[in-house]
Image 1 (cartoon, rainbow, N blue to C red):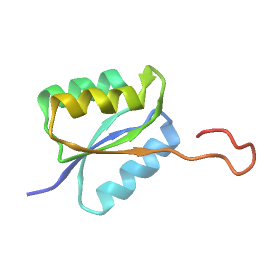
Image 2 (image 1 turned 45 degrees about the vertical axis):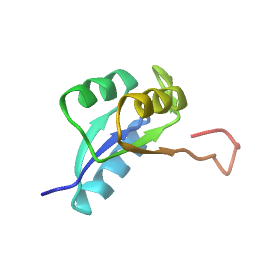
Image 3 (image 1 turned 60 degrees about the vertical axis):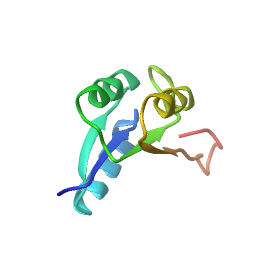
Image 4 (image 1 turned 180 degrees about the vertical axis):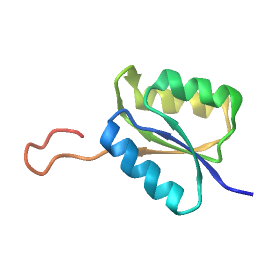
Length: 90
């Protein structure tokens, strides 16, 4: 049985890179570009792991992480970084 991961990443380029890497490694990737989309996927599917960006276009990823910890038993991790050039969160 294929292991499933919910990828929640609002940045289109990072979403695609992470999606391809996970799929190449044999994971079934459930893909959401918004927290609303992630909630919808969680309603119909139960992934084993959630990879969650903290800066999302429709809310705060940390708040969402706290929300799903209360409602599910799914492991979660946040994906975030900073630009070397500007120091801005990416």
